[in-house]
Length: 193
Image (tube, rainbow, N blue to C red; front, side, top):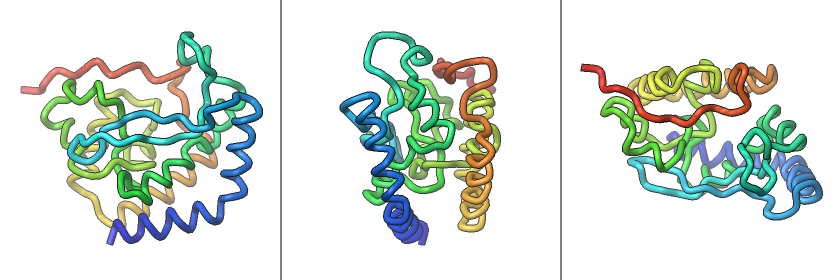
């Protein structure tokens, strides 16, 4: 049922938003050049890697992320427009509309046994952690919300998360962490005994 909803909703969204998607692609191309898309290997369900797609928001170079984030990139992130290409990941079955966000491959060996449960489901474009603080909460809080979702997932909860996501995006809440340009890298948690 969830897969059917993911497929139908993602396809409808892509068709309905195609003028926006084309407009964003042209904006990225004219202001930042090629490539238009940012592609990065991320862990999917059970940790299996897949290539996640986003519209590019940073310039090329060896500077820190905060320095490479362009004005256009800030605008795209502010309104979550950079996330649109992930609808293709959903259509391909690599992601779901709702689930724990796919993080970096390098984090896989750093998770506690409990935190690793976040990979028991497909990663999502939005999730319970995103509507409960997004980038303004700690890694431990994010993983707590992720694992809570894994054990409580339901169609009703997914609909609630999607509705809350629309509200958060409209209010532009939690996009960048308070007082910082980007979320600090996860360095691991102590296992609770």
